[in-house]
Image 1 (cartoon, rainbow, N blue to C red):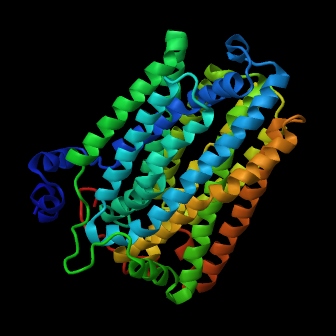
Image 2 (cartoon, rainbow, N blue to C red):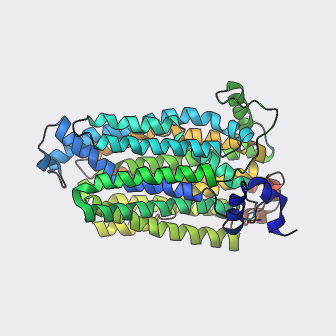
Image 3 (cartoon, rainbow, N blue to C red):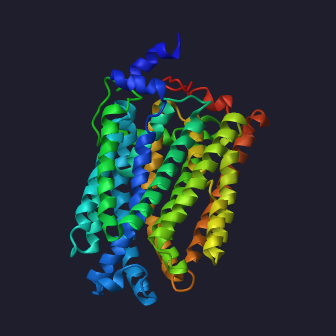
Length: 487
């Protein structure tokens, strides 16, 4: 039977048009991830500028002319102190609400399919950008109202819920040979979206000047609706509903079963290993959230960068990252078959060095160069999630990824105050010193990955099992539920 005649293809790809699209182009969740992070980067610095401007004029009553472009150093420090507090509250609000929702998504998606909680969070992002569009058009509204759009997206599940189902979806449609590459491809798509967003933002800002903000949020609103239409109409389901199982969402019995699944004993310390891998993912998310929340503020203060400078830097870094990540994952995983944990170890070490050098950089050129040293940082999470998918049974992956994503969602509860405290402490000395915190956390990750490797080596029947992927003990029970042309 040829791939075109495969009954499993007909099973997951419906209606007919979706089946034809899947046969020719094995693209599924990637367009949604692209749009979400395209819009994030498109509005990232612009949204921060709006907050700074509104804080400057409404909270501190400075004139509009004093609150445009580069601010006076004293004004910049005063305004940043207030806006970073709003940023911290925003991140905490998003983490608490979406974290609670994501606790129930894993079991529900294992029973009812992955697609619903890809569609619902996408709808939440559409509401998010509509709310922002309204916010920027109300000139005398307090900057604290920026918390309302965050509430809209968080109640729909936010990034935490969508990533649970995205990684389960990828696991459903791949096998052991191509899963690591497809996981990395999702992160590469994410990075490509970030590149496009920053470059588009700079172009619009340079072309349209003060009208750029309205245009950018109009683009964001339209693109979020296109993503919602794609998710609703064109995205095929990867897992059919399980008959005879409770379909209720807020079911605490199911939540208990999720926790039992996560902590259930597994041979060769695999429960401990998966928990350690989950903890490493959480720490890396801590770094990403903390750095991104305050990087624009730090670069404004350190190098007097404006939005165009920051967008250019972010676009260049994301471009280098997506090329390095794609080539690195393909060569190491698909050609050389290097074990995922060795890749994770290399990524952690280079990121530790990169953050250390970034904190010590004194010119923009140095900051660019030292950022490239850590351009493989986005490879860490897909490698670890691939390891988890090799260990956890396919029927329980939704529960496990829900547990991991819930931990990630609650990260800002601790990281936002931690990073804000460090940033405020060094604000008037050297703002980039806050990256020493990131360097220390990457060093912790390096130690933890090494510990996981040592434990695995102790239980390996043959040391060669740790040189390549495909340990029989890891893959004997992880055959995908759905077969695709990737296989």
